[in-house]
Length: 270
Picture: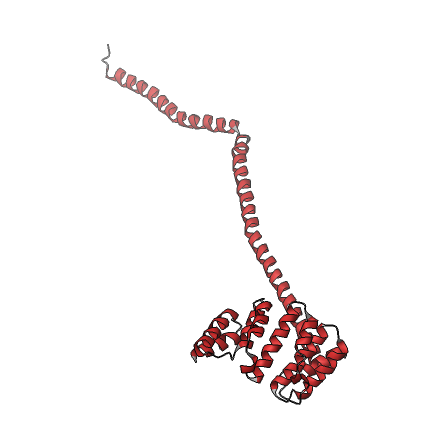
């Protein structure tokens, strides 16, 4: 069915609301209750553990497959834990299938859930025992029961140290990148400030030039002019000019004498 496929895909993607809508529609259309565990888990993920418990209570467990019924029980016990009811969660999981010889996938998950509930209830030693029982039947390694045992024993896994070292290295690289970005920003700010300083220097030079221009007329006015030399030059020029007319005057004065002589020669003697 399309509804079932879409609902399970939404559940796998963490789209809890869509998963609930699609799977409920599938149940209503088919009359089946094959995905009650997924619906209850969606309710838990949405912060509604009471609804998950109600789904468990309202289910017809006898009509469910063994794997489906165990998965719904595990989710309901987890919802009890969400509500802080850890002892109630432990009690819910104490079913006959817990101590059976089953090797199915749900057997490992049931024992793991029971061990986790014991640990939440403060029963550390019992929790370690049941994590061991879960690991013994978990051939497909569906759970991290073996790692939980080592964690309770205070043993650090080498792979975890490597991951921690990688995380530290990533943080160091991130810090270096942040420092480089800050340095680049400081350089950009310095570059932004330099043109303003140049413009200020240009303005100061321009103001200095204007001050110099204002001072030039004062310096010209203060310059002493040799007026005596100019007067001497002016007096010499007319002297040279008026000498020639003087010579002509003398010539003119001489010419009348000659004329007078001629006149006397031409005049009849008495």
